[in-house]
Length: 219
Ligand code: CDP
Image 1 (cartoon, rainbow, N blue to C red):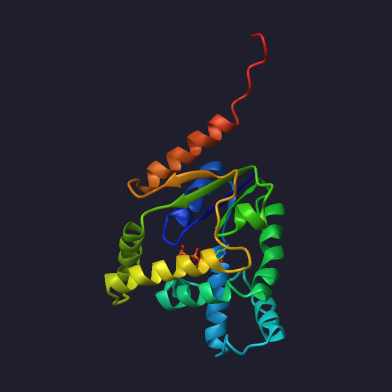
Image 2: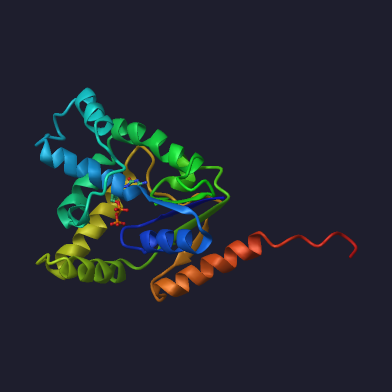
């Protein structure tokens, strides 16, 4: 069983990915963490994205141990912004593509996988068994992200968080390679007025309805 979840920044796709995987006994990969890890590595190597050559980026991504536990520094607004910049670079996406497919095809516990990100249903796993696309109004997503960053101790204004989210959505949707897009066969959920449990329940209902045995003709 392979499930693809895509969506906008702070739409709740990470929480949904985690809880859905737990409920179904599947492994979960938050692919945003991979791009965030590359963003952190770029920062640590003091690499200038405007001038860095493809080989330097390739070496940086391939030298990363993506299975390590990166810790909370990946969740900062600075690293989120850097992640969205490195994610627009074709060389970075190509280097991460196989890692994501390998995880889906050989999940650690062997039962199946849930991957969440921006291009999972459209590019990484176009043949996934189920696809979800999750979105919410920008001000609601900014409120959620503002609370998350404040809980982490970041001193940041709501207006800055909102403008970062809008900028990041715009960059993600308009990049030339693997832009953020709902796959045509994805099930759409607007989480603006729904909490995490409600979103999970909608997904589980959808999966149940999709996998209900079909009644035989004439019975
Ligand atoms: O948590 P949030 O939704 O803010 O972001 P994330 O999922 O951690 O992803 C950080 C950034 O990585 C996004 O803004 C995207 O630019 C990029 N990303 C991507 O391009 N493709 C993916 N499959 C996952 C993330």
